[in-house]
Length: 397
Image (cartoon, rainbow, N blue to C red; front, side):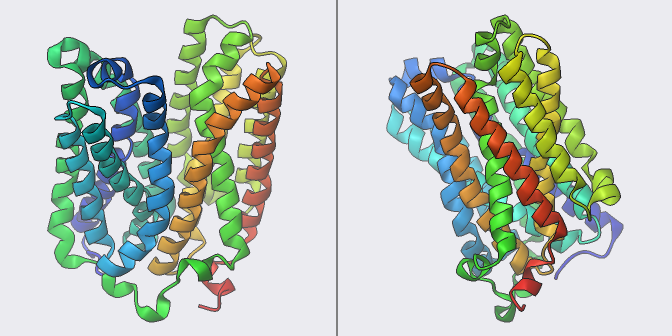
């Protein structure tokens, strides 16, 4: 593995990983907040707007599964460069659109790069920081959330300041270019050589491991619940008697709580990482939050938001476990692809299913019971993950 032995080199690589993570959500979060302007200017109907909001999860699923093969062919650093070039190009070119087709195709390009970046984060940490997996996983998890927050909060005032939606969306290409520069420098020291043929783990081989399915189930349950929160949490509270403005603010509270929880993850893993305590706690917190929304949404909405936000720590925990439950870079890449690809596919289905169940039943009770069931899966699958041996040992590698 071609990693720098110097402290300066490790700082550079660590900062580059965090910058990569910071860019993986801006192409998503910046669009929704200017959707009205997009629909008006590009002639998008409600169906097209709905497809645009679903496109990220589709890309995350499809390209998530395909990234393993790309990494084995190109190497980790070159794959990272490809991802960032795709993000920057897609973001920059879609602002030139005068109709839906160019905007959709360039959004697809940017989101495909983000999907590849999702998958390469855990193996990059595994290769460069095998002794700091918890810390770097926490930092890139916080950067993912921070990027999403920046995209949604800064794009609105920029679009209103005279630059319109084109400047509000296009300016994020500059951030991606900044993130790209250090990876270009590291192309001479790629880690493709560490992914030897005798270590290769094709996805059909990885799929034979119970650990793979536990990881997939845990990530899918968390991802589905998270995107249901993003889409419907405020509406659930509002229908339960909470003022609409307050309900919207509660979603912000829920999201904000996730950042300090993610930053606390290294200490939590050091303290309880070898036990099921963390995944069970995340599952129980999520169950408690959804039960509060189900039984008394207007009694303590702040408590339900904070509880669900703390339970959302399962996201960063699962990503960290990808590194902790593998011993080779090839294994980390393959497990990351198998965990995130199908997991994000469920994330695309869950918000739709939540709304459909509400429309069919005329109540939030049935959707909330399903979401509570998903939280149980987090605890059960997470317990198996916490007690599991490394992936390669189960496959005889």
